[in-house]
Image (cartoon, rainbow, N blue to C red):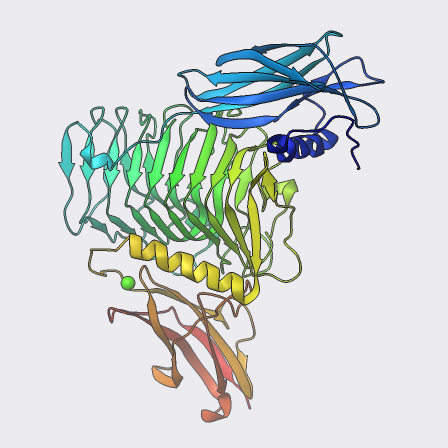
Length: 532
Ligand SMILES: [Ca+2]
């Protein structure tokens, strides 16, 4: 569509107006009027701004030829005030000042024909300042190796749980490692929740394994979760109560190899994820209603300064393995998103599509604000969905691909790790399973075969040694796949081996994974037949 302008548009608004006009071609639902001729437009259509801050809106009638037609406009607003400022060459300006309450509000322009156009204003609460351990309130300290769950829903408001040295390598029978609740303004800082579930563990088992559930039938309004590591659980953190988990913050956290949702927000609470590394998720953030969930369209989730990577898993909800789903698992009833300064990485498309409400781009109509995000796309072809390149005239997503994209991601990870040193000893051995044979591929080995094991560590895998009946075959494999979503991608260690090296017969194949601290784990055995 080509727009013709009778009036000169001020340079500072050109980007905003262009974005708004493009949007208005696709999303006219916010604009009502008599139809048939000019229609009233307000721009920008969606804006986010801090409490008490001001921003400009502009309204004009848009002619059928794409021209602007001078029009008198009256403004009204919720959540703040709007004052009529100037009219120039058909562009009618209003200045909106946000109030002291965070939330979703509206600005309405009405012209002399009683046509109206509505814009959405997201008023942002100031992010929590400083480390939450510095807040005033009662203090609890958890130290060293933890041998049981931490489960309390009776904490006083503003309680600080200092888990800086706590490590939870709990038995795989445990479903929820940490629950905290009871009051508002709780603070959890530090600690490691270390799963020991082999990669072959079924998705249905992993689905019910939670690192942390704040609230859980008790209040955790405004909970702050900082410096937490969760490795190899089904969920990193799950907010599971409508309203009781509102206003959450996850900051400086590291969730690695998460087998379902890295962050689950299926009751549509608003919150912030900041400076956090979601390091291999089946789904990155889920906001898809559970029974009992209420409307979340007035809530906002802000993701900022974070790294988010999807990881193809060996045990999945559906489809051929390995695969992953999407960055956003999102309901129409879910919150909107503000995305600032994040780096995302996907090595392939989502297994499930938009029909399953899996979105590789911000879900339709859910972007409240966006600036300076990078999508590292290491799959084949073009990115599977359309990412917005700009939002209100500012850069929103830049796509990087190939070697340059991988380098950009690796640099971002190195920077995050340098800024988030891990002071604790590595106490968790790796998790390891055989993938092929095991989950995929023939158990009859003939001639040269490629054997693939999947190994992941809370820190780093040093190598994987394959064995037949306890005897090494081949050298230790020290490098997993660099990129890709198939069985040769990250976490997958492949050995090509000539099966003529042993006599025909039946053997037990195992894989021994070793982490950089020297701890080892031997996989479950797979019975194979060598037949040459
Ligand atoms: Ca380890």
